[in-house]
Image (cartoon, rainbow over all chains, first blue to last red; front, side, top):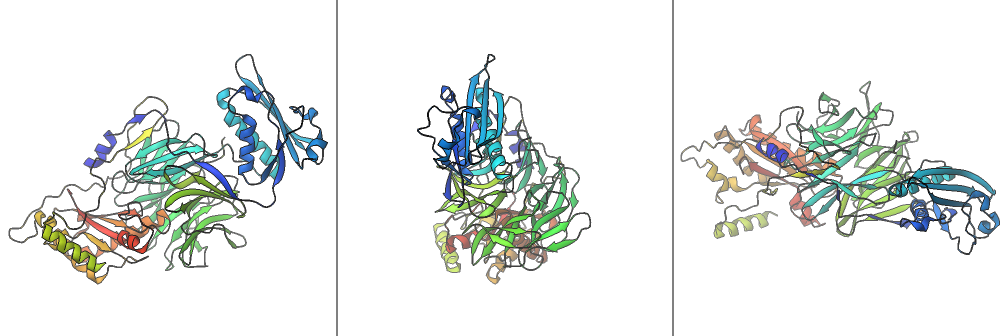
Length: 424
Length: 190
């Protein structure tokens, strides 16, 4: 009790502190088929340091679905749809081209225009205009990349999302939030004791996480805007594995207060604890399906750690994984089609995906110590934790296994990624 | 593992150390965490919900001559100074060789009704963090259940899990892993 009070009093509020561990993201395995796209530098963009078209190009390249075609030698550079000479781009092998311009306005903001054109069909596909401040250029580039991605693939882009992850450097742990491309990392929690299991609220305004600063696992919920936080669960024993319900009002948590790790529901303000499941052993790692009607979880109730699905209204529990002796850590995919999980095979831990309808399993990563998968809100990319040598890194893989990325921090051990929701 | 432990005890006993095996160690500084906010303002952790579970400092009743007072906990010649129970991979069964340690601590709690202990469960690095929190918890609970059978009472023991978050050895080999599959017995006030 005394230690808890001391910890609370010792809280300090700092100005937003840039985290020391900046992630850089590299593609390490290709998709096979990529869309060749030419991205012409926007007219006037060199007036500002950012290089907005470069951020767009990097986003598309990093998705693994696009291959950049150079526009070198095309003079004059087109900046509007009507200036594009399709033959010039066709001869360079491009299927699509992006052109744009930036014009300062009287009020200090800048009008950013872009157009996306289909080179093969020689038609414009879409055009948008944004009026923004220079501070918003990076975010605007991500929005442009999202529009292009969605137009050419049919899926929503996730370039405007954020990721959370935990870093460890020496004895210091931080919960960091960064843009999906690794930029702008900001530490939102710092501690001398371990932090784990960050979980975004569905509206992106709060983060739940587990902290061991009280010498035991305790679940907190913290506001992204203010940094204020509240204990969600600090019952006798261990409190962990927070998972938000899709309506953001409640969380599933694993509590040992009644003996053994069991799953409970709790309101986001910490009130109203309600036991959900009952087994003699371990139930943990809950994940709601996107319709809110079911909960996936890990359990050893059948003798080995496997994944089960609870239908909340009826209380019925169904086993989901049957292949292999250790399948844990389910995360329902946002499209409702299945779940990503961790599978142990021959001593190696790998990320796999299972389809609800077909029950087919596809192993996506090689291991040996892969864990903590988190799926992008478009269900197309999975970020997870891996080992490189003796260091923890993050890695990415597309949901069909074809695109592979590595996210490396030069200084710290990185783990426990959580992909944030689409911005509203 | 066993020979290592015996050797360590002998060496430590000869050297007269205060304790032969390290007690689990979270650092002694008051654990603090800082949160950042963009603007001014204070934030404090507010606890809501049910009773906090801090273990109050226990007063040892120190039965005269019984060797079960709190000094015995730190005496390297006393089995009570042994605090670590080790486990096999994926297992939470207490091996025979560790039962005397568990029994000694259970008897201590039985003899000192106001004494309190925390059992901290740990696991090796393999497997997900959350599943390891649960597995290590199961180890701590196994030790607790045996202690309850042997004389301790429910209210005297809290079990918590560190999962794989606080390894004592950080190698990626069986020697390190074996060291980390462990329950530590911590008495209140330590």
